[in-house]
Image (cartoon, rainbow, N blue to C red; front, side):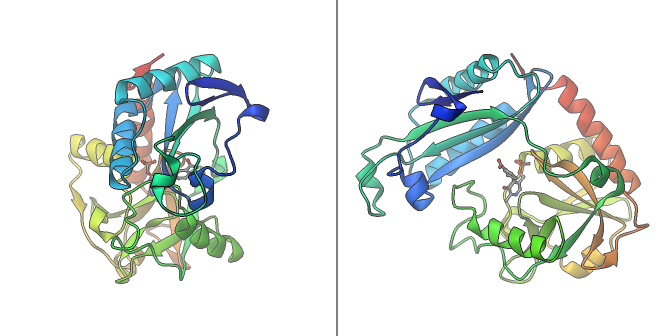
Length: 289
Ligand code: PXG
């Protein structure tokens, strides 16, 4: 495996950054997770745009422009001869003296591109649907650390994941500080009610997922009414269908939330149809390499 770091390729063993990198010391940096399917990078532009938005929000200069970063990504995929990959892009504030002040890094940002595989959940879970549970850890308030930034500080999500795992679940439902449904630790959440699709708006404390946007797009094309709308756990409990979306998770059905069976207790019709349509789209859309 070859890993891209600042324009050079390193073997997995040699792909290392300084212990003084502020990405490690303070979680000061941003990242993206992207997938390629049969040599097509899915929604590459959307992910790169979001990376630049996250970087802009934390006042981090990415030393490459968007085209250069796209080129570097393709180059890394080719170098690794991967047809299907999970692309993990990271930009940190770089190496600097101790202390929070980003000026200590003198603009030496570190750009890393890892191309590898990822499997979050078993195949069986995709077929049968998963059970999730609400955890006590609430999603960051957007005035504290806005969930719309895909930043290197993921402890909010990891704390929630730990709670879920301790309780014997694979994924946690996170509420925001007002008690409204936000998202899961690494996935957005959707419900279906009377044939219509609902997902919490960004302002509820969710990352604007690229997969979330894609699902909304597919639904609209297929005349399924969509709503980016606030909802509570009650609407979730009484919904007909539920599923999660994410680049790594893709679309995964949810059949139980906090012990309440969702709909028929099996992956719903609309969920299955969206899963199929999403799969079709990944086969034909993307940047070819
Ligand atoms: N919410 C959060 C908090 C996420 O981190 C999503 C939703 C889904 O967004 P996309 O754009 O992927 O549809 C994410 C996705 C990783 C990794 O290790 C990244 C995520 C999730 C799980 C693992 O790269 N981010």
